[in-house]
Length: 262
Image 1 (tube, rainbow, N blue to C red):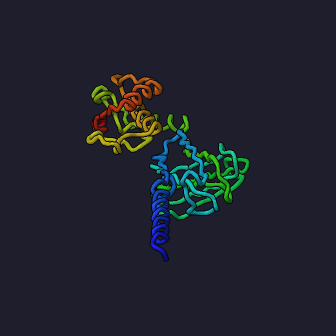
Image 2 (image 1 turned 90 degrees about the horizontal axis):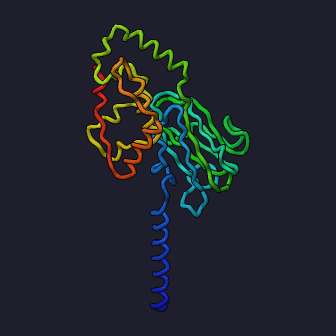
Image 3 (image 1 turned 90 degrees about the vertical axis):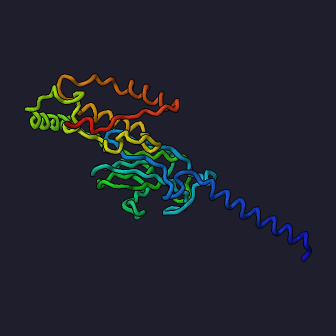
């Protein structure tokens, strides 16, 4: 074999290895269960929605189920909840899997699920608190833009009113004027775990999604007690102020939630 021919073969092998490595390196978030698109902790009444195209040219790969490429999502439940997962807004025949924290299949759906009437997949299921994954893909080898939504129901007005009445009875003898800032965590209907946002160390992991921010704010509003409670602006005003500041690279440090206790 001539030296120049050997050299050409070596170049071809090198380029093949290089481009294979580049393909793996360029895999997008959501291509594997180890690097899913994070939906975060689901908040009652707030829908997470994301659209991704599972076309082979976008770098997703096929790990499970159908022949089409998979898109992985991760989410967490702070407490037991009925979870709705759908592809209803997608424009072609899709397939869906729900996995537990170890990656085992809990449920799957192809057509005519509980939330979508056609070829788009959907699942509605009661789950315990914990971490889960959703796999979105096309039926067979179909590909295209898949819109994945996740949600848990908001607490009904009746539930909120009953909760407020019961808490009011428990604290009926409390001298509310002595409660600092008019906020008492013990009376709040907590829609998220406030201890995750204690303000002692501000790092990137303390940043929250719009849905999580709403849950924190609504929890604070429900902690109001007595006549010295501060005025709470409308949520849309809070959104504009807080997220405009975050967009400018300014970090907002919060006081410890322990300040709400007596």
